[in-house]
Image 1: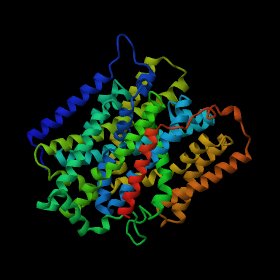
Image 2: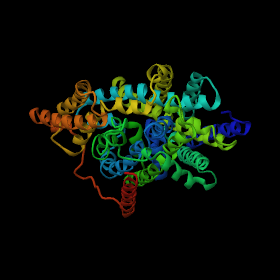
Image 3: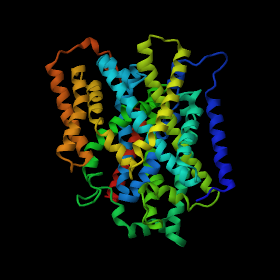
Length: 520
């Protein structure tokens, strides 16, 4: 694969344009100086369209496009459950979680934990999230993104790592979350258009004169085993996606943790103008989620017919890009870079937010707004340097990096979900119970992994969630209740939603039922 001059011009035009747009939307009026709320929470004024597209942009990156296409190549459409079940999860977040967070003026997830439980759990979880974001999420986006850039351009992979990290850092360094969220509409539009083009062109090549639909039916006839959402127990990939448990088990725990209690995702909702805008944004994100498997999984399945025998599944998407004509390749490559940068920028900003607000401001006692913004910028630079240097040592040996990420985070997500669910909806929960769930989640996960190595990790996540929940409840009941520590108000929170949100939510659920019925 080689980029033509036209492709290069398209990509460079995009890069210059998105950088200029980020600086323009981040500008301050008059003599106003950026304060922490401006930089980390976009002045708490994000409109619904920015929230919805930014949720998707933060989520969809190289680990989805490259990683999920690779999993589509290896195991098929079943990997789309991560996307389609997320659409339902997002609606739950908008309906029941965001009203509590916005009512209580929450800026970060560690802050919520302190307001609800106390200072120790805030510090423990802030440390955990920083480690996870830098050494798992940031590195995975950089690594998988650099694979794609290297294969498309022929560039040295480490050089691609450095350039991706440097540009993603630079375009949001001045504006913070506002620069990220208000440009994500462009990024997501480009991502969806580019992904649909890849799907259409690859299916068209399979279908020949019959076109895209003929290509899809031919692919379905040739590889029917790759079009089942629920894998049978004899599938070689059952351990990754354990049948019906995908619908009723551990995936719900992972999705609730990721979409509801993950700083770099929920930060968009926390920055909303009001709960109405947040819920409209969430609904938009749910509808876009329904499209994502067509954008990222179908090209991976198409690669089975067009490029059988790939050395690594993660090569599927870049290999399909090689089939694109001049001009279209440049557009699709720009879309891939857009997805990588949008997710990187979101992650970088959230790392800076947690470090600055949950560590530096508390420990130093300094609250000068301009100073905090500058500390956040320094934290962002350091995070990118660490991510670039540690990406290859951590991820270079994995064939399906997406599955590695899910497996690793599965050690922690049961405890996180327990802590937040009890914190939101059970007043008797206390800090001792929360700490027991956090520690117990890791210990129990390791014990089950060692004792029952054949258990699918998703089932392990579900089992550990139930055990951690029981542990948190028992410890909370056996230890002293300290009502004064709970500063989260839920008594005056309204969970009513608009008719538009309700109708949209019903439509999303109906579409999911149809999809799972057709591709069962």
